[in-house]
Length: 150
Image (cartoon, rainbow, N blue to C red):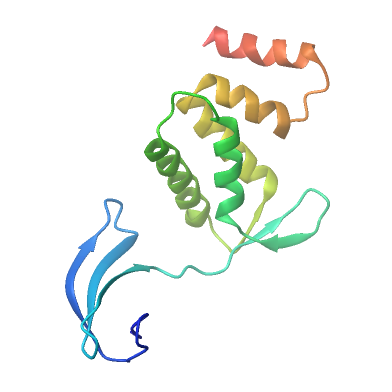
């Protein structure tokens, strides 16, 4: 590991800790030359996933897009940042568990909707209205009635 301060190649690990979900390892390091300390995070590198869009085009999987959609849906809602991160982590884990290296944007959207429905009903309606392209209030009303029946 190269030191970010002096670019020396020799560093030693002082402390190593696994994150709660075991997906990330945090390492506290010290440069053997300048003796400055820094932290690194180690993640498993997953096989590249490809997302097939509705128009047939493909693009690389981007976790940030899911995170952005969930954040927008939960904006000004009583949902903690930790809970949002946990939800996005669950969605990504579910996507990566699927067979193959390709997934449709529709499948991802439905996964997000299912998680938001459990997390926050208002966030669910917000996301669903954009994702399912509600055209008028009648479509909102139908979706809210479905929520109220359960």
